Length: 96
Image 1 (cartoon, helix red, strand yellow):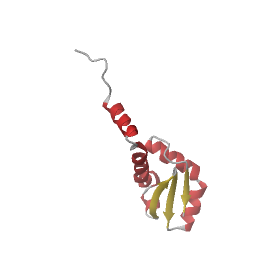
Image 2: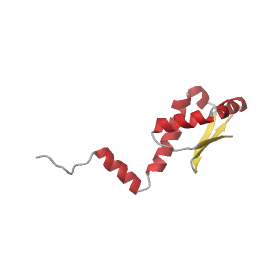
Image 3: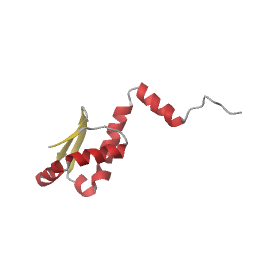
Image 4: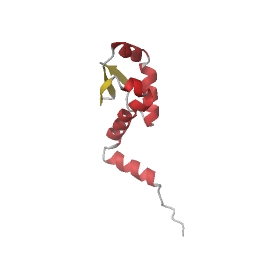
């Protein structure tokens, strides 16, 4: 017997996360975790701290030269990080 009102489990989980306001914090953590994967271990080794506030990713770097280099490619980096997560999580990056 086939059920017509069946929903896919992925849709049910997504709806639950939205209802409980857990989707945004989960995506933020996924983006922070993907930093090393997107930028590589060499750049990640110069990264001290990452956090997100108001859709802005704050990155503390130990290299001033790397900071300047990343600032020039900031828009592309925002796009790549959001694409990796599959949602628009951040709109800007501030390097410190």
